[in-house]
Amino acid sequence: MEQLQRPAPFDNVPLFVQFFTLLGLFFVSLVGSILLGLWLASTITGTTAEQLSGVGYLDKPNVVMGLKIFQVVTAFGVFIVPALVFSLLASRSRLNYLHINRVGNLSVLLLGGLLMLCAIPLINYMGELNSHMQLPAFMQDIQSWMRSKEDDAEAMTNAFMKHQSLKGFLFNLFMIGLLAAVAEELFFRATLQQLVIKATGNIHAGVWLTGILFSAIHLEFFGFFPRMLMGVYLGYLFVWSKSIWVPIFAHFINNATVVFLMYLEERNLLPKKFDEVGTNNAQIGYVIVSTVVVGVLMMLIYRIEHKKKEIPLE
Image (tube, rainbow, N blue to C red; front, side, top):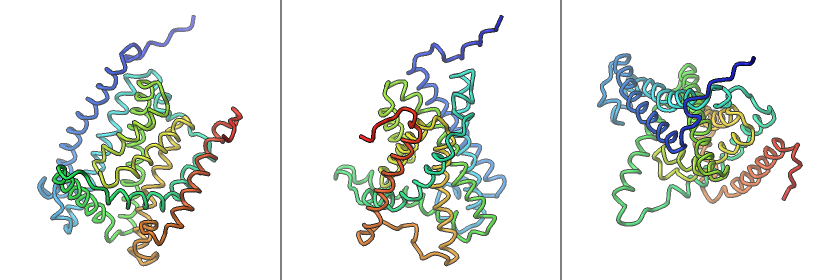
């Protein structure tokens, strides 16, 4: 007689309990990974917590290396660990729950990555518009604080990209491109989005709410809307393909392109600020073309994944 599979711990647990469990796992992992990251970075590079927490020491190579170690530890701890632990509670088939065991349609995988490249002018234009948004007068202090934090984050990213050797370039591809893509997609799409969709009972509400949370957790108000829409796009890729590797690949292409373009720019193989195409009104043509191509590619991806359902164009 075939043995029945034991139920998962969360099979009969209310969704709000599951949500707060995931939230608790996130915050515990956040604190733990920050402490571990600071300790490892300080031990390996000889830096102090004060140096790692400010931008006044970014001209020191050991501080930059310490920050890279910190980034790797926190990316793994804050996002991957909670997603993996939660999957142990949510399902007896962990790989299936996280949609890791399905590569997905190769054409969709490639088109998803191509769309991220074609969307660069549109994303840049939206980012430029977002950067000029103003909060109400009574929130100006908050706005100034957010602006300073985003400037600090940009300074740190520039320090990572500055004077990249081939070894440094490959490490940045791993840290900023691959690790960030895997970590964030496992947490936001494979874990959080599935919970939100179940809670709302609506795929679109789940995708958009997760996209909002995805952008909000980065704490970058002046880049909120482009990142939110990118999160929504990645969310639909996950829903349509039923494979976490499709949004991971698209996310990787987005991040890796920034690293690659800055690497080429620093070696004068591309014009300076080439990666900022679409940020001024003189380049509005690129933005229009980018928008049209993005729309066409999204429709094509949707049709490929639903070709057996004969979904009409309208």
